[in-house]
Length: 126
Image (cartoon, rainbow, N blue to C red; front, side, top):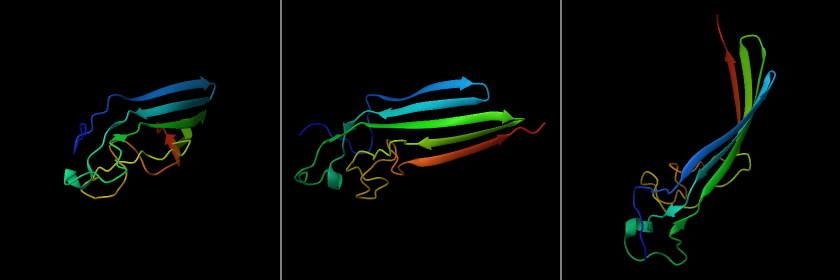
């Protein structure tokens, strides 16, 4: 039936690639987060035969983040961003996350929280 893994994930490739631009007091950042697919864990800890419709391959996962920063205030910067801009769902896996059967996604590879707004304010005290 092929190779299946129980606890360890063997990703062939994973990266975070960013492109940033800056002009005056403003800067922006676009980031791509990618994890390649991998072989899934057999349901029920590999006991018995796989259920009908079980797919051994977990698909790859790609998300995009974007942020803008303004630094035109003395000693301060303000950043607003969006993580998982396209609201991409994580790939399904049969892996038991922390022995919780049926979670459906693996936090070591993906984030199930969906699109998120981020805010950051930094102030430099003299």
